Image (cartoon, rainbow, N blue to C red; front, top):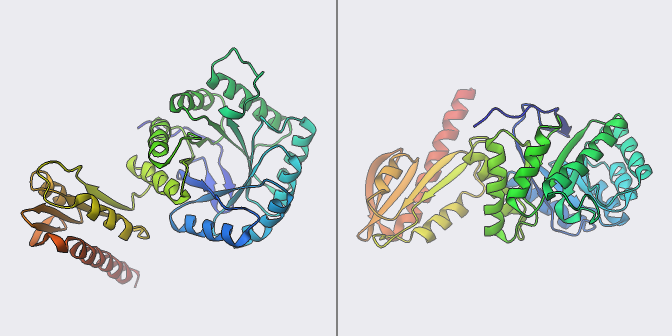
Length: 361
């Protein structure tokens, strides 16, 4: 993996983006922002899942004013997503948001942007220039490739903010095509010193969205490009956070947290690997401590994977071989596999907690 691209850091509440700060994970609420209670509940759920920053839609002035209560109760920084009406951006800043996302394709009057930038400067509120391929003006350099058009529009906005003596900037260049996304970020990474927010937008339902984003985000991060990410997909935003954290963990850019290793199964499989691994994954959903659990369907690769895990089972002939700390412990009936795994996982976590407490004394 290449050295991380150097950037000018910005701060959203207690989260630093860029510089040598860890790559952060973002998501977006899918509630009606005007419904403060539901929106705060979803924000807290996202934060519990490991989300660092949450963006909320601001479709009208009622939503902008609701942000005051939402920001007070949110455990993570809040970014207001603004389209078309600059007055919503002004109201969002006054409500205490930690950041703005503006789309230069639909806020076109310079004087409106000047007002927003002035207010953001007063409150030290960073602005993300969010260019989406789907919202580019049709007549904007139509003869050029899409990545070049996106970068050109973003650069116009960057230069405008710099002219206004504003540098609390991050940039995103999103499109539903992973290759075009990668090309666009590579182009702009060489031209600006500001943090980049990565993502493949309108990426589709969970499986499709996860794959497209893993490709687009993962390739760029592996090249040292990118400071904060969102895995966009249609569905539960908790899945976006889980996928984002998995991408970072897979590239060793963050603690992987719990990790379930399970075999794809084949004709030798003598264990309900999909069912058990799904139950184990759900069991570990709220665990933040790194722990590796192996669920293997036979004794070909099973023992080897289990020896690399904190806890593992390998199935065969109506029973499973239980491994703890890479060492075979005993065999148990296959129907008891989940209960035994849960018991062993709890024991591992309790031992670690006990050791940590003793070290703190």
